[in-house]
Image 1: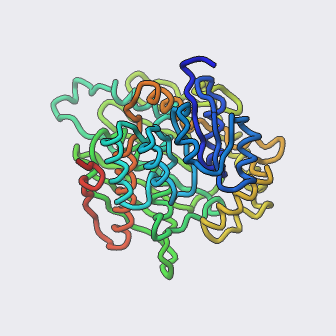
Image 2: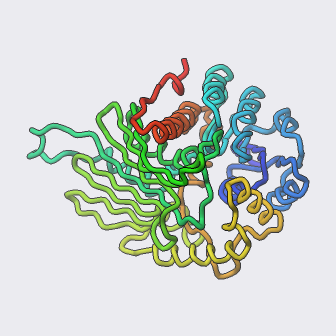
Image 3: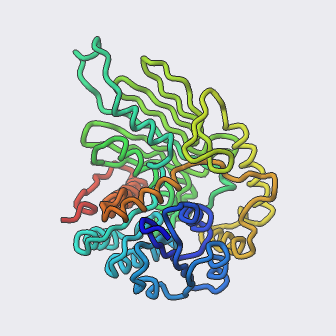
Amino acid sequence: MSDDVIQVGLIGIGGHGMGNVYNHVHRNPKMHIRAVCDLVDGQLEIGRQAFDPDYATRDYNEILRDDEVHAIVSSTSDEFHAPIALDCMRAGKDVFVEKPMAITIDQCRDLVRAEQQTGKFVMVGLNRRFAPCIVDLRREMKKATIAPELLNIGRNAPIIHYSICDDPRNSSMDIDPALLGRLNRETCHIFDVTTWLMESEPISVYAVGGNRIDRDSENRAVITVSYENGGVVSIIAGGISHMSMPKERMDIWADGIAVRMEMFLDLRIASDDCRPQRSYCGFLHGEPGEIRLDTHAETDYFRSMQKGLRYYIGKGLYAASSTAERLKIWDELVARNEYRPPEGCRGTPLDKGHYGELEAFRLAVAAGGPSPIGAVDGARAFVMGRTAAQSLKSGRPETIDPDLYAVS
């Protein structure tokens, strides 16, 4: 094995890790899965068969004591993200952990301090930054220049609008008092990527919406985030859409450029150059980051999604009344190797940045840091979600306290 291949331990052989994370470690020629860990024997066997590791264990401390393991990739239930990440850094291992990074402010602060004190880092799985279309549009934003005839009116901070609206049959993420439901488990992606594009710190959040007023839950919200540079982000989030429409769409307006992105498949960059629309191909019918010009991939994608929806409805996944029940059903499907649609249904053909984020993690481990998306980034996304939840309850804008995530 080449000296530049990093040895990786996997912790948690569950639905999300198997479906969205570990396959990208396995297919990376510069990463070798040395060990897999899960508390459940059946899941452990799934990991053993899928990745042929050097060994499998029910105790992740065995992996942390292994001097040949360079780094950990962890995808477990949310409440274990922070404790496992802390143990990894304290044992001298860099660690990739799925979002949300933590479920409390205290856990966030502990992780920020651990990065500062151990010399190791955590990378949070906020993959949207690494989607090829997002990488491209950020590059274009940085290159954009204001027209000379507009210079006399001064520069303006960007306005970003992001909608992340799923079919209600494909979502049961009610608010859990500890986990904040969508705002911490899904909308955290949008808090992170829009802040990254804005290149400024958030100062306040105003969220309105919610439903099911007889329960402490939400399934829809309109969220406005104000930034130090004067920029504004608006987010529409919830299980209120239909599978035939893009779940995610982003519009950006800034001096010298306007951008529209739909579902990581189509990117329209409007500028004086009149660039054509670009369509991006996913892993299942294209290479990572492959771009096709003047094509339209959405129709095939949505047809595939609808086939997948019907398949999982038949498996009982969408009859779940809570996130916990749905995750249990999902893990049972994984254990029976039924988590993929039948032959002829392509599944999700999107490159939403999962391969790119794991490659960025590998490069950071090899370089000794820093983390591409570190503990401060993960804590900021959590604080923004918590502040949005507070605003939903108070009915007024809430100020974001940067001391909660920028721990000194």
